[in-house]
Length: 272
Image (tube, rainbow, N blue to C red; front, side, top):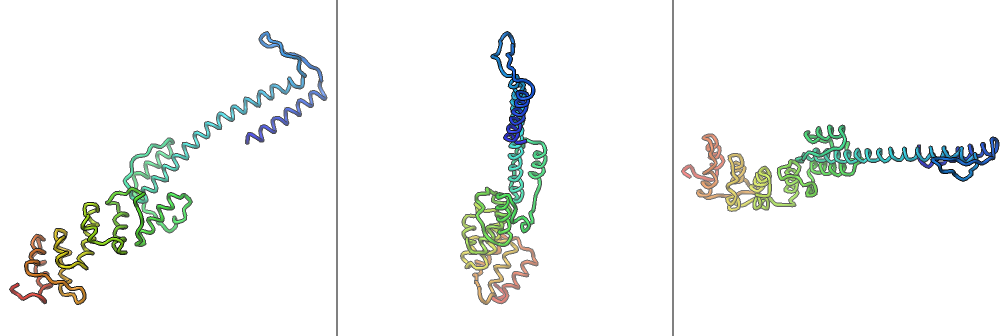
């Protein structure tokens, strides 16, 4: 019951009872004696209404007390609800989560489940979700999955987070950053990003530039490099010494050396 409506109804009832007693029962006045104190003479109608007024005050205090308790409890639920939404957002982003403290048992259970789960959202149905924070998270994930690059700084994700890695790959593809920029600052990036950047770099770099980062060459991408030796449009050429530099520490198998020889057979004489 709303307090304003309850107050209006209570005063109307008190006025009606007071009017009825005064008009149809008695118009006399009397005084009350309580603990040796004698009150002034008051109309009987007013004395009849007085207990009703005291009851009204007591009920208002009672409702007010439980209303305050209800508000405190509701705030706990609201805080826990927001914490749970944050936990879901972090789970969507595959972010490392610290344990959150929940004030209510049910949200505590849900929070524990979410914080220890991996959630892979289907972004299309969630793109217009009502909660603003979750909506932004879903939009970010959707853009990254579609190959767009976004700003992830505000999410404080770790360098090895899959969305961070994919976002950097998207930036490489869109040429927002160059592969060499990543190779020069490799300590700031996850190992998989550096490897991916080198794979992109060897597609366009010159011989000397490739040799600068030869420590990233492995038995897989050596063939991508050698593929360019005979390429018509993007050809590169190494000296015998440079071939040795490329191959020496790779630990190639016998079959891989034969494959290398086949790659180089068009450009090198058998002795070489």
